[in-house]
Amino acid sequence: MIFTAPDVDDFAAVEAALTDAFRRAQEAARAAEPIVFVLRNEHLLGQRGAPGAMLANALLSGVRTLAAEGHAANAIASGEDATPEDVQHWIALLAEGRGVAGELIHVGAKHVGKVQA
Image (cartoon, rainbow, N blue to C red; front, side, top):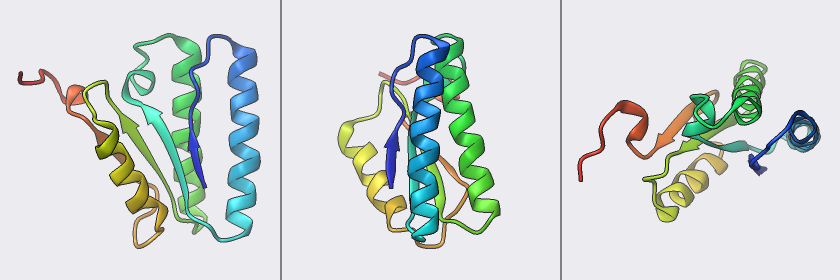
């Protein structure tokens, strides 16, 4: 199950996205399917407002809780400098559900500081 966090502007949108993510993750966990949440680095770091930060960090918490319970759940955080091909590569790897659980993969380098031109 792959869930890409939508852009949210208010608390109602956060609630709707979390409800959808919870329902889909619950179904995937019951079916023993790998779970991948796709987030944005800017939202994890709170750089785009409270609603996006709340959603991204709640989903990351869900990934770690699911992994602690034995499910193959992981997250990807993509930055503005990440290519769609790189993001898809990591989604495909994590969607296999092989040997990795509870991890956050950062795709793109902006979360670590200055990006070289």
